[in-house]
Image (cartoon, rainbow, N blue to C red; front, side, top):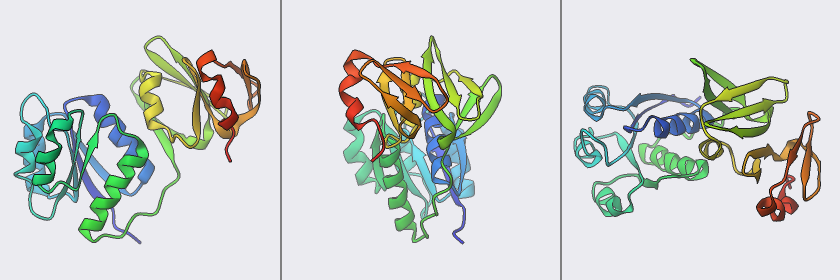
Length: 231
């Protein structure tokens, strides 16, 4: 059985860390430590020598390039940044990959697998996919297959589950969509995302779902409905 991969993610934006945490949960078998303070992260990395570091570049206290130059030998690092101008610096420092924000799960997974190959480690078997979101002060683990649809409300999202529960999270729909596998979810309205396998029937105006709910179809999204059902 493959060993747990020890990873560190460094970013001064909590939402960026939340996305990485969710992506790592979807891959499975990753022991992830998160830091919003770069100086603390560097001390931890030097002392603990993790396998992989996900590293933002433009941060308030310390530039990520400074951290990259001090990462111990044997630790791989992947830059996660909104700024393309650092790409050449990243590869000069022998970064495994350079993820330009916002990046999809498939791109993140490809970069992680490159790091695993460089380490000479066995690729981890995929775990059952789930989405972890915060509701009030609790972390809620929702199996991807248990999500019927997501509705955007002002400043938060409501996740409707097959089990009948509804989870309310402060993650807005645009950001939540980045955490969901694009092969399984489709945006059908500016306020609604649905799970493809939960669609029972649809017209160009509405979609009927497996739990009896009906959601509207936005005019600009109606052309995507021919590909709404999974192949």
